[in-house]
Image (tube, rainbow, N blue to C red; front, side):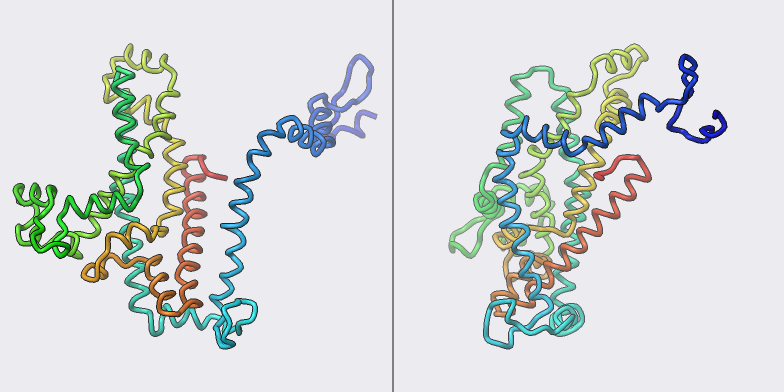
Length: 352
């Protein structure tokens, strides 16, 4: 009898009864699997208020995220029937993709693609560490009131309209052309005094110079979002056990050593997750701020994929305008998957 069940991992020998019985842990696992849906339904009914609060978000995602996907079919169609309904248009396969990438609009598309990647990469390179540094600085402030005031001021630009932020940038850097008597802005004058920007550039308007657009855009983005982005990292910092600091101090670690060996390892998983999310949006630059900041003189560096699609739509190429955004979104999805796979293999931390 014993030999019959020798290879069965789910049975254990009970010396009191002299019989092979199912492992108690396996019994629990079987019971959980048997009543899986029943337990889930009970949990939903118990916390039904939370799920009711989730319904508006599901509705918003369904109406503004999933339903518009149907219009992506226009990327493979052409409007030859005189109608704007995608269902009534004619299929042309990948002709729109070929026209955009290798045909009539290829030069403009690749310029917009390059500008989008460069702006996003510089934003990741210079903008991603700033919220982390801010969170570390906030953690070193001992006065709660003083820290709260500084945090509020750092969060404030995020809650100001993009239009107001961009208007401030125009005024601070000068708006020559709006008024014949307009003078360079305060920032332009300061940069001229420091010999960072030539005087003639400041007087003609830095916002009209294509070479300065990327720096202005990235610095504006850092100023607007760094404080708000530090909330996630500061939450990870304050979750560090105080005994870890005490142990580090006993070992003779100073402030910098504590940041390196105590705080940063505690923030590592958060940093990796946020980095993966940021890489996923590497090619997703919103059109609002770019439209408000760009000028005809700066299109060579300011034209990005989202604004390029808007220009195509304004020129009555509605079907062709869906192609660049589709390429952008597919590329972003592949970047997320790739970054997640690399992170999982390198650090055992991933989104899924």
